[in-house]
Length: 132
Image 1 (cartoon, rainbow, N blue to C red):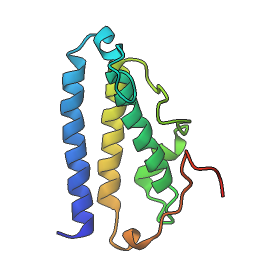
Image 2: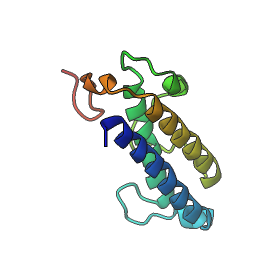
Image 3: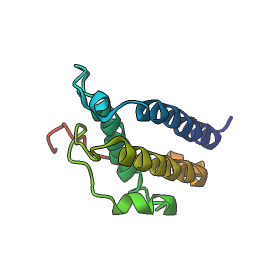
Image 4: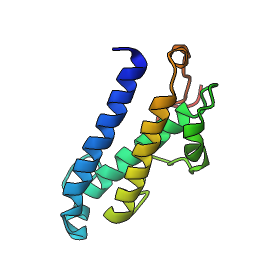
């Protein structure tokens, strides 16, 4: 399997698994989603927000690729999360809709990646590391 086919496979799997996770999460009450579970990001809602923030941060980095993938234009328009624990959306309904949209952007982008795109070295600054 080629690299681009593998990326498409991972994007589709990501979309499928997120749909299952959010289906389960929507079966919980807002209170159950928000209670602190002593997890790294506190609650289930906090953890799901973390995953969306992380994906958004990475997609914004990928959006800087010289190929200027059109599929990532909506990501370029999003504000950048300021931290990995930022609560981007405060309820599961809005977060679920945003996650589904984000996954479709990822799937569409994965289909537009070429083999030569993957030979580019991505340079970025970590959110935790001090600037060099």
